[in-house]
Image 1 (tube, one colour):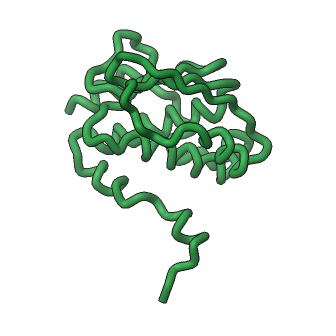
Image 2 (cartoon, rainbow, N blue to C red; image 1 turned 90 degrees about the vertical axis):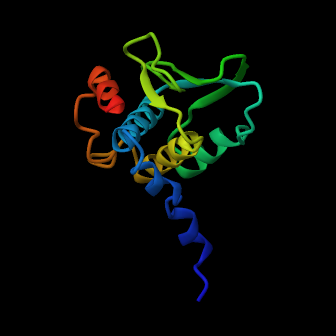
Length: 159
């Protein structure tokens, strides 16, 4: 029996399950979710990415506003020579997808391990937006109400 397309679109990518078995995988997913919530609370986004990055970027703002029409977040993509993805947010502290932690202690660090982190991040952004975040109570995930501690997060990633 074929699965209706609407149900297929709502399922999580199977790579999320693989992420949980890697070193620091659970904490990495928490960091991804924290950065997704920050993006949805921000007033604007600039994503600095490697020059050879081949992600579909042009329709991200449109898809986000289709999912949550009350959200309008301008998202700009800028090619950079660094081999990391740096997310600058207006009104929020951003984050970095990189092999090593950033020098800035307040930025959310998402270790790049298998290349799927960006796709998981976008899935989380869309899932939270679909649930009504940030204008809802309890829809930002189980750890949304907890105070984020980047120092503790980085320590947990290393173990």
